[in-house]
Length: 105
Length: 174
Ligand SMILES: [Cu+2]
Image (cartoon, rainbow over all chains, first blue to last red; front, side):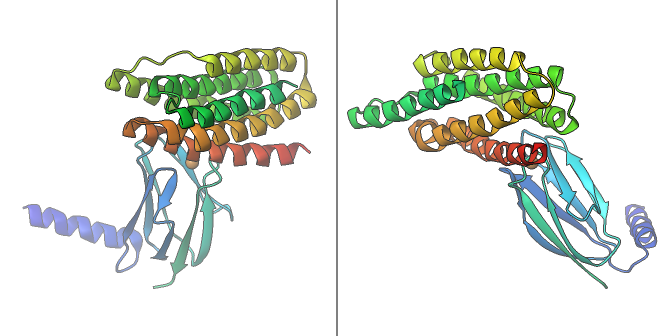
């Protein structure tokens, strides 16, 4: 029963992503920093930022690809659609910077 | 003028910290908590004035960010001192800061439009710079409780972010 549900869930995830091995990559935000600050991901992967700080932060792409707000103890995510390097920062605290290298499968 | 006085108040604190350190009587945790809380409260009040007076989108957004962050950190500071059973202790530095902030607010109240925006943001840059120096050089090294020291250290990183943010807004106003 459980295994069936899990299999269905996985099938749905694969279908939804349209790719074989879509992953969720978690970036923790703590002590006013993205951890890790640099990640490599594939097109179709999801990046999820989880904020452990007492203040809100953003993940704002310099190329305009995304602009997400993470409330204190909140999280937010995006699905990567195109390959390339994306530099991002926090609009509220521009001393916070990060980079995602998006590669094709 | 007021800015210079605020800087002078912190300079006096730095000096007092240095001298006191030599005599083995640094500002205690109760005084440090009061100074940090007061510095946050001052920035919230300045931001509330800016939200009321400014019509510039970037300035109003910045001010709302200041209200949100400094309120969150001050709430955390209050929860911490309660947990530690420390009563924040008023002191000359806190008093001088509050007095000078009131004077600055009165000065800004007379300005409007772009003149207000520029004066508010320039003061925010200078104020965060001064507070960050005080945190880095006096308040953090003097704090004995690890929880208080951690909160001040995180606060410093957040306020360094505010300083950069304020510098960006200041550049956009030019
Ligand atoms: Cu931030």
